[in-house]
Each structure stands twice: as C-alpha cells, then as structure tokens.
Image 1 (cartoon, rainbow, N blue to C red):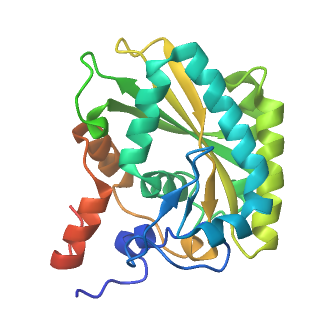
Image 2 (cartoon, one colour):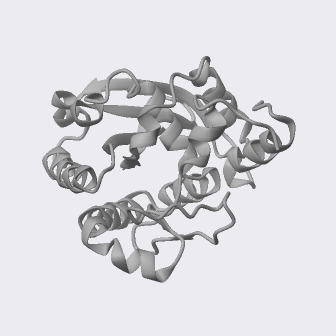
Image 3 (tube, helix red, strand yellow):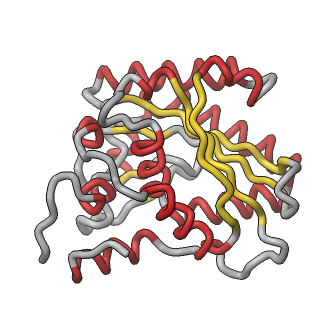
Amino acid sequence: MPSYPSSSIVHKLKEHSCGRPGCTNSKLGGASMRRCKQCHHEYYCSEECQEADWSQHKSICQFQAEMLARENETVGSIGEDYDAWRLAMGPMLFTWIVVNALAVFHHPEHIQTKFVMLSVKQKTERPVKALKMYCFKSILVFDRSALPQVCPGTSGTMEEIIHDADERARAQGKAGVAMLLTCVTRPDGKSRALLRNCPVVLRMEELQVGESPGWEKKMQEIIDEGRSIKKMIAKAEKTGMLN
C-alpha cells in the first residue's frame, strides 16, 4: 500500500469515522457504517455507538429532522433529490470543503466565527444517478453576522443549535462543529429551490492536514462529473494518486 504524507488529502478523507467520540471505526477501515435514520446526517459503526452519542447528537438531530420535514413539505422531490445526492456523495465531500474553505489549518477560530455556503445548480434534465444531480456553482465564506440575511427567520435557532453542538464537541476533544449551508438553485441558476443546513463535525487531526492545492477546482470536477469520492480513495490506495 502506498505511503502518504500526513498532509495528503487521502489521509484527511480517511479521517471521517464513527460519530461517537473516541471511536475510530470507519468504512474505509472495514466497519459497516450506518446513518442516523432521523436526520440522515451523522454516521455510526454500531447501535451502541449511536446510543452513546445521543446526548451530543440529539439537538442537531432534532433540528435537522425538523428542517428536513419542512423542506420536504415545501419542495417535495427537490428535497428528496438533494438527500439522495448528499448520501451518494458521502460526508467526506463536506469535510473537505469546510477544512479548505475556512482554512482551519491556519485559522481554527473560523470554525466558530464563519460559515461556508456551497451553491449547486439543478441540471435541466433530471439524471438517473444521484451523483450526477447537480452542477457546481460556487463556494463562498461569510462571517456569522451575515446569517440573518442568508437565512431570514431561522438563523437564530440555527446558530444556537450549532453553538451548543460546537461547545459539546470541543468539550469532548474535537475541533468543533463548522456551519455549512448548501444552496440548490433551479436550472436557470437564479431562483433558490432549497437551502439546507449541513453541520460538519471536525476532529483535531483535521486541523493539521494542510491546504490542498487546487481543492476548489477539484470540488467542481467532482460535483459536475458526479464522481464518487469513495471510488477515488479506493483508486488512490492502489495507485498512490488522487485524480
């Protein structure tokens, strides 16, 4: 197996593991990961780990589930398509975006003071494969003070939930909980169809990975082409190259 430097994106992507603090089981490590059925956000390697993490995960889980229910009532298949795309892409995509967009390896304080907005656009014709659902539009970083303008009506609750989850995560030795919002626009690229809150729990190790050169271009390629990060990592394990 190839040996990668500690700053390698391969190492960073492999860091995603069971959501229970202290558990290092991961899918790439051979564990059978399961997703929380209520919020469809956090992953666990077993029911025992999920139950043990419930006290930390509870507030985010309930808020995410409520947002999911409201969005599905409002936008129907748009929300379902997004959930299918996010599940197909996997959490590593969002971790990679947050680590690089917030430059947490230089400014760890950005986890608590800023948020990331990932914008994607629906394709004119709905694809069969969930991975190919969207086209990349942009990745922007804002100060948390801009949240009321971006999410009028829900920003206060959203920020409070993230703040509480962040404090618990740091108390358990993690780097914190970063705020990532995903904005889905319609095929014309102008009108917003969906805005989803996607909090990202960051581990201390992810502050040490260093910047990934050309990461935003790579994100655009992954989203536009509907590429599987899981397959990219599997290939990298064999070849030593992440393409």
